[in-house]
Amino acid sequence: MDLNPDGASPDPYGGGVLHLVCEYCSSADDYSADDAEEGMFTCRRCFAVHATQATAADAHDFLATGSISVRRVATHTPAPYPRTPHAPAPARAPAPAGFDDFLEPSEPRDFAPRVGAWGQPEDLAARVRWRYVRGLQVILQRQLEVLVERHRVGALVCGVAGNIWVRWVAASKVFDDMWARQALADHDKRSGGGDDSIFPQQKDRRRVEFAFLRSLRALLPIYSTLAVCFLACHVAREAILPSDIYRWAMESKIPYLAVFTEVDRLLGSSLYQQRCPLDARQLFRPVQVIGAWQLEAAAGSIAQRIGLRLPSVNFYAIAQCCLKDLALPVDKILPHACRIYEWAMPAELWLSSNPARVPTRVCVMAILVVTLRVLYNINGQGIWEKICEERRNAGGSAPDENSSTFRILDDSNSEEFGMRELLCAIAAAYDKINVVHDYSSDLRSYLKYCKEVIFTGLTCSTEEEHLIEIFRDMFKATEDDNPKDHVKSQSQGVEEMTITDGVKKRSRDGTFIEASCISSSSDDDAMQIIKSEMQDHGFHYMPPRKPRKSDGYLRYRRRRLSGGFVYVAHADYYMLLRAFAKLAEVNVCIMHISVLNLEKRLACIEDRIERSLNTLQNLSSQPKDELRPVSD
Image (cartoon, rainbow, N blue to C red; front, side, top):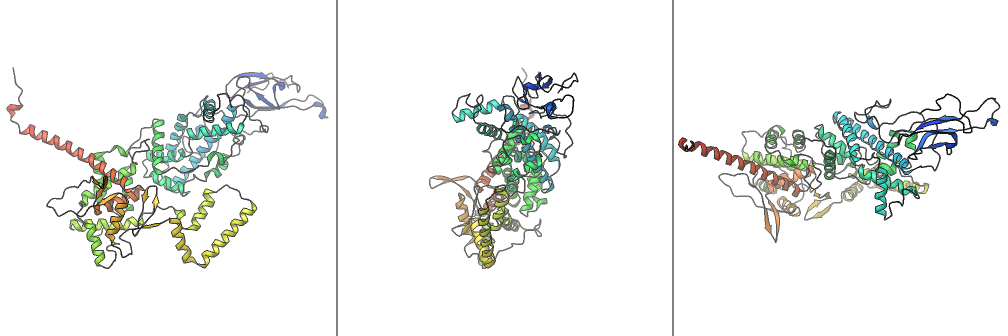
């Protein structure tokens, strides 16, 4: 900006010349003090308000002699999109690589805009857009810090996420020149108005503000920060599942639900941030947390939009974590599972933007289920029925509950004993898999969670605060008087358990979690509990197979019963399904379908290999004369 290049002091009554360059349309022009409206200069081409302000004083108000010059304070407002993406950023707190593209200058600003002056819609759109994008960026930075410091994720994800974020913002086209007009035009179409109902007249500023915010949330959703975190972990080959990101976000172990209260502190108190008419709660408070299924689809959609070629999931690391959670021998099972993974290479191990496709973690679990069936010959021999029979004869005591370390499982053991050890270990580990959120463990934790996470930032009147204190004292007194009854009522109320046919069940995202029949202390037949559970999940129980000389791999199919198709399975196979389905936090039917698809793919590969070998054998058995070409 060139302030009076001739060097002479301008006349306080309009004699000076000010040369200004618009930071939005780059047009340059000369202005005098008379062109300022209440100290603000307006671009003659795009009508944007310049950051340069002018003030004047009357010479008769001062006793000093001489001329009084106009005092002009030049302040710089950042452009809506950085013109030099690789320019060095000012001295600020260190940020991960790739996040420096949207940093704004930090020069002091002496004058704030006048109250009620919001200029053209383009200027308002630039302010809302800049604050929204910068706010999502600092939220993403905070989430990455927590992943690295608290959840032991490698620091490589910070640099990967920075590059993904910059490319995602550029692909969203929120910084296009026509974004503001398009947002208002879309708002007019939804509200039923004409094309000129808001933009030229500017009658309702609040409608314009929320029209811009609605467009920004559609192009850059708040949950995209979680999707970028998961995508960065996927690219960095971390053993982080979308269900982990979802659980941490719900339990506030990753800043998401209540992070809007920290945005103002993280962004700082610059003038350009203060000029945004919307507060942090309106901009960054999420309405809900998307599920793990949708989170994986969102990550795949972002990778597709920015043209990022993704590898498959880190099968070795994820499978190793799953086997440890189920207390199974990693050294014996994992090498065989990796062979099936390398042999089949199913397409379900790659991220997809299709929200209806089965998640990648389910395919990993399916490979483990097939591996266990092959290693331990689980093909409906009725081993679980024998365990339940022994338990009933022993008077209801749980057999081999603590024998999950596989200390005596070696090559010298019989095959039946290996299957018994496996099924008992999986049944014991089933109860230890915790898919219930921490805040639902008791009523006190739930109330604390609601206060600190759900209703954070809300202010109450004096009467409401006094009423809350009264209820809190009443609850504390009741808890102190009857601690045992209070804990019992909490477990029944918060867990929302219902009893059906002696099985306690709780619905969560399409899954059902029941008490294990191994650790159940009731006198009911454990086998009847399993049959009832299978029926609730849409499975038909099959009795054990008769002993055969050669037991091959048994493939299950659907059977038509009572006018419809149902899934059929033996109890041994169902015990594997329910454990891995609970670990993946999906329905048992979804896990079974994924196993069937994998088995079908492996059968096709085996059939092609068999045909190739037969062809080679036939060629080698033919006489040499038949193979010799016939000459004319």
